[in-house]
Structures are given as C-alpha cells and as structure tokens.
Image 1 (spheres, rainbow, N blue to C red):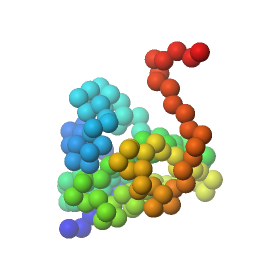
Image 2: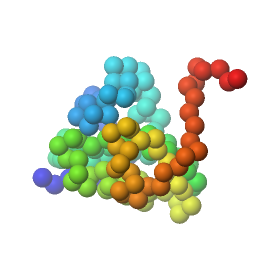
Image 3: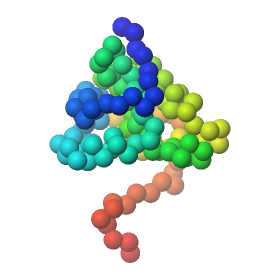
Length: 137
C-alpha cells in the first residue's frame, strides 16, 4: 500500500462521511445532516487528505488565517491505518502550510486524548466552548 497526500483536493460528502465512520469520528459528527457536512467541507480553508489509490483514508480539515492560528477541526484516519503514521503526516503537512508564527489548535476526541501529547502537542487548560444557540449570561 502506498499512501499519497494532497492539499485542498475536493472530497465528496459521501467520501468524508464514509471516512468519519471508518475512523470512529463519525460517532461525534453530524453524519446524518447533509447540509451541515456540506458546510463543513465548503468552509474549511485548509484540507489535507491521505489516499490509497482513489480511496480516501485520512483527512485533516482546518480553518485558519495561515499566520497566527489554525483550528484543526477534524483529524480522521481509517481505523485500519491508525498507528501507521498517517495522522502524524496529516498534521505535519498542515503545519507546513502555515506561517512560522501560527499555532495549531484542536479539541481532542475522547478516544484520542492520549495521542496528541505523544506526537508533540501541549495540553492547554484554558479552552472554553459555548453552543451558537446558547445565550450569554
């Protein structure tokens, strides 16, 4: 098997959802909401993909200004290829697309909490979230 990587190659909703399911990330993504998935793909401005021939096996989907910060929204690798370096390479290629002052930021899936420190990420205790429909107090 020879994995190739591409930057900003268009992927279909079906390819993305299929990979999310194969990676287990589909458990935490709106895979049954076509409009949301379409918006996720259309509005990401940095997407690195991993391919086995024409078969999508990994994706790093980000929103970034390329200079100061990059939010890595999804890192998904086919479960059969996890621990083979595909995720690490997707992250490395994402970093390579950024300016030297940019920081890569993400929220870990519960099953991946131990992965990110192993590849060099530093845990940050000051992150916060609020839903778009939740009123501020």
